[in-house]
Image (cartoon, rainbow, N blue to C red):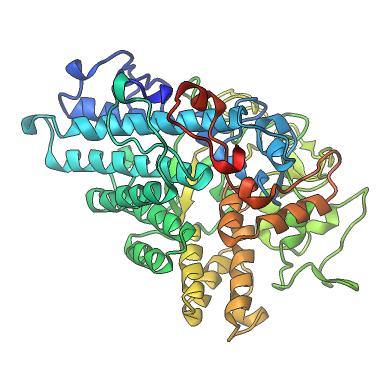
Length: 528
């Protein structure tokens, strides 16, 4: 693989994460002159975190041809519309994409860049003389490298299914390798996360906030077990998290701002600092005339948020019956749709006439294709206190996993294991944070497995909307095709979601550039 040929350690760390990272450049430092002490080990580990900030991974985009970030993976399905289709999800949804698309190649490249850096760290940390690094630091660094490698490979497994499994620093003569099976990738992801759990501390000093912890490894291990339908594995991984000090931020809207970044709900985040030039964070960026027009909430999602009585806004579609608390509005003014609704809706979506840039008093005029604007994670001012424009790189952390997701993963595993009574309190805990009624008081106690499963899936949708997990959920539930139909039924102008049968809509193509460079690499059969 051309991206992994001979690593010259450690690429630039300039522009890396928040202030706890030392941003001195390590360009062209080789193994012979590096990995000699604890300070250099920390710099090497920082370089792996730096890979997470790639545009196509977690830093986000506003208008770019290089591929949408994970933040936008709700556009694969029914939650959101990728208005700038060339970013990837829009064309993918319309089946107007091929194996040469930059979405595939840039994602593949960034993931293997991170893997290469993690491999270098794991291989070289053991070589540092004992007198130059403490055992605790060495274990933590190895744990972080394995955690991050597991994270990178989990994305390769989920989205590409088959890919080369590289576990050491490659030389030119061994760089051109064949791909491995999903089962082989999956086994390595589980191994890396499991070993990271044993090596990582439960917390760090405040100055080191943001490094991967034991809880982060447990949470992502649980997520991967959930994808593989290993529900007992989910319970085993999430049980220790219940006593690690995590909780739910009482203010859902505030959580998705820079003021919420240190909440004990955040289990693992990719950190950004607005004061660091070229840090690349555009997930919170917006245009001044319309909120983040490339990433638009869809009507079917907005309608899926319940009213404050815990019942759907639309009680029946045949005959059409509305909840008495709900006013459907008109084509000219859809603002009444937000009244008496689950607070997570107005924390996540802009409606017609909502103010979206507070310093300018600028109102959203429903001037998007879906008539709704994205609010969650998006900046609320045209210029920050440090003078950075809303459209320039900022300082919003992206939450890879948070405690509400952990609770819902645990509830889902219980439901699938038919341990129904134990799932109610977990779902209720997530609802209580936004003052929504309990499951028992609305849907009822003693629900069937199928009914409680539907409750859980709805809760995941409204709790985690616009956090990049919708495609992940739809794929593992086997409901992606139905999501395409809902997206099509929204009738967004010039948008024609077209489900590709046979599983093609559930897997990314191995990049053509990789196939051309590596004769040992074979395309996924669905894309041949």
